[in-house]
Amino acid sequence: MRRGEARRDSGWALEVFDKAPFVTLSMVRPDATPYGIPLNMVRKGESAFYFHCAAEGEKMDCLICNPTVSLSAVSRCMPKFEEAKNNFTEYYHSATAIGKAEIVTDDAEKIEALRLICERFLPRYIDHFDKAVAGSLDHTTVVRITLTQPPVGKSKP
Image 1 (cartoon, rainbow, N blue to C red):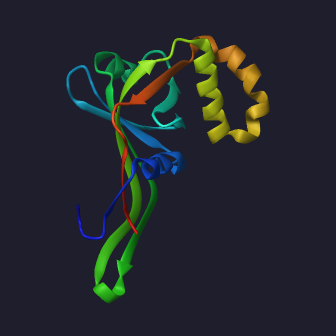
Image 2: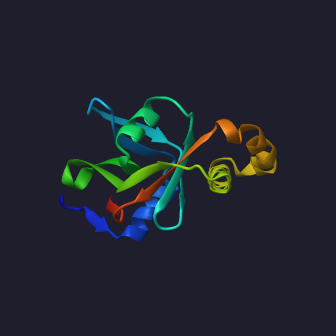
């Protein structure tokens, strides 16, 4: 670890994920090349993350081929020039985690995950949730990522 960095516990790392506007999902394509994409995700409990997507596409190809994924997030990023030290630096809060992705097939779990996503990212429109989900549930894919090890957080003040 570099000077000035601090390793943080898993609870702190989960808070970074909760505060980050996007979480980058990193996967492996069927041809073994890397693929990463920032997504709106929501966390439930200590070890589950959810996102929604179309039933077909590059994400789904990757997840079907290899469900092991990596998550990363930054909830604070502040580049700074420290005049007293004549030094360029960056203050940040970051977190990473490893997990296994699964397509959610249970409608009750899909609805719960979609509600959590709506409550996090569009809370002022929650009154429209039931009608919207009734019209889109059948063609919306929800993916659950279950962490396979505790997340890791790092920060520089």
